[in-house]
Image (cartoon, rainbow, N blue to C red; front, side, top):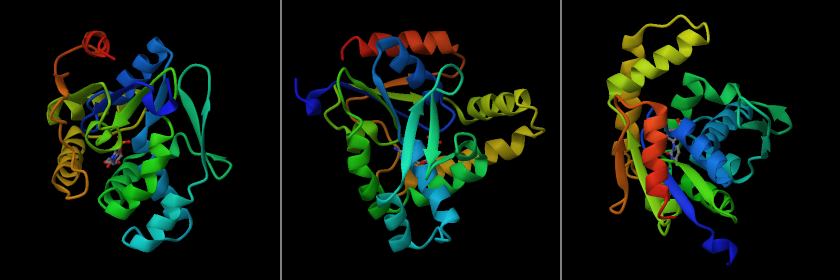
Length: 226
Ligand code: DC
């Protein structure tokens, strides 16, 4: 089997739908590679800010995306990988709400998406790849044998984020989180460049009210076709 034919499970969906957790679990269970494509957009935004490139400077952002000096280093438990940008561990920094919001702004720019395309496809290696994102099944791996669109209501996603932050000792209100989720959904779904939508051949799984184990079971059942 050639490298380009390694199977891919594409998992797309809005932020907070549980994609991150589920794709990590799937990849671990199957012993496959994992692509966290959102991290690449987050890293582009972070690297741009560090290099003094404005988030509306298209040419500058394309240069940053094309020359991202990033390594995803496996670790033991906890974070599945350590994310290293230009030699610095930015694993936690790229997870902030601000970085996610900046990533969403950078991600509307088609030339930035083009600059990150091949880097994402390079993750497709044997024995297989679990790809987490917004356009895995529609743009990056349109020939993926399994496509899952994982979703959940905005209220449920806000609740999950609220619980995560509370557990981490961060004092927040749920209303602003819900508003942020709505704004980001709107930007991700209504942009002209690779808008967030299920591929025609995707299986839609709504995780509202389901436990992680239940969602994983449904995804594994879908992955049985990989
Ligand atoms: O999944 P995430 O929250 O890490 O993604 C951060 C932002 O990056 C998200 O708001 C939209 C964008 N993104 C994208 O446009 N395409 C992807 N494949 C992954 C993320």
